Image (cartoon, rainbow, N blue to C red):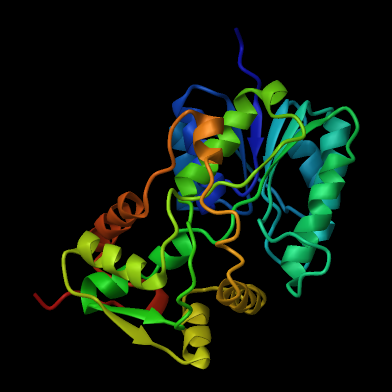
Length: 309
């Protein structure tokens, strides 16, 4: 039986990349849409993907890139023009007569949310849902484990964890588990038509508990280092995060303080959809710790942070 060709947008990103990798590992034909040709896109091609560079906001380019595929993983671009890109994608999906779209959304998606990105996610979900003749599934995780673990190099090489002192509870899902839910839906559209899934980790954790887990993963004592808001902003900008995304992230910190990500968490969506339990935070943290040890540096600071030992 010939497997349907699946188009994956945002394929060089953390979630899109994981979706593409998992599909390729299981022998599914993947057309990976990327913004530009670089080392990441070259790695996708080497893994067996058909790589196409495309402007995610250009309806003509998208139409050409999607033509000849049957299913799609759609990751809306995180920028002020998200809605424009989503409409362009919807037009292309309809013209290509896709049979299914799995869209990455947000747990907080709501038309009244203070974040522009989150309000737009709510609208994107509805745009995709209105595409007659196309099955859709929404994957709407909350605050990812990656948002905490991208600071692992600081812990590994300096023994500190920069913190905004947002000690709220969360059951953060790994990128891999989020991707596994999306991939399961892409493989069996009929079982997931019109469904919405919120992947979570297996347990609620405070920031203090996460730091303790990160300390075990990197094998050293790690001190929580409170940082003023301006310093966090500066660190994120040094890591290449756009001003728009910085503003959105700060809004989510406020959501976390109010317990938004603890609401309804943890759940068993990962297990129900994929047949495997969600991985725990320590398993994810050890993977990041191994990368930090291999890199010997922190990109978030914009400078090398090699261990002196």
